[in-house]
Image (cartoon, rainbow, N blue to C red; front, top):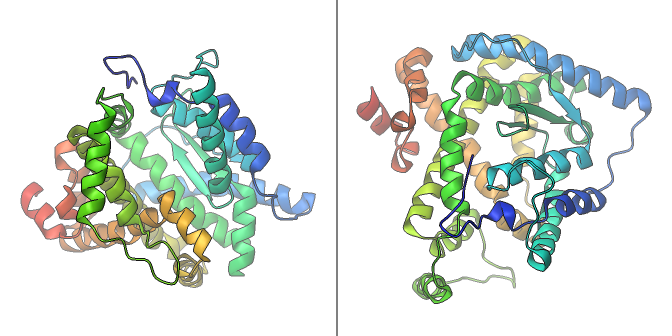
Length: 356
């Protein structure tokens, strides 16, 4: 993949990724206390659940790619941070090689900032399928976070671990059955991360126009920031091609997350005895009100936008599958033209009318 621009500058080459991974690992929150037996059991059950989830997911989705079932990689928080930094470097045009030198001072500053962000995220992520991993796609499961959440929810650990794997394995199946998806993401990311060569005044001018045209409401001394506002601010400083690329990525992310949520609920009752209780408690946890600082960080990092992807995407998939069945729904994976357009996510009948 390449996200090089006319000037040869990319975001991936502007960040000291080695520093990001090292610093992020040091800043990561301590993991929940657990005995060696508990950690070993979680490790083994997650690995087994990742294997056992594959065939039910393939059967429900109809996405039969036919390959062998790959092993998941069970990791702790620092290991996830290192893997995420590697993936982000590849996604943003920095390549995989450690000998790629970023800009000296700015690279270290950007690396430190990225490491801090990864450290914050590392305590909340349960799992992730990385289509850009070195050597091919890789499923990562963060076992300390799984232990922490199942304790908070007070659910059966074995059931919860299988439930988590159903979601993440669905992402693995999506990408392995449709290899073009990774290239589609790569091209959109290339546009987002390239140096457009614009003068700073042009960027600042768009930002000023955005702020001038919108009223910023402040209540109780809290910043009135939500996922829409932050994305709007991001779009305001982007060129038109970058805005279009961002829209493509957001729509694809909404589809992938919603499809995984739909599959979790479709497969769940057959393989997770306590699935109804897990779903209810997990949804309550998602909706729980956060302290002001936590809410601000979630908004800035796009966490709230991610939550919106789950609900809007699932509503889209639920509607289409209920109307036409999973087999006809799978026309969505044909190519980039059959993916939903931004307006169709919230009006799935428009996608049915256009594509089917």
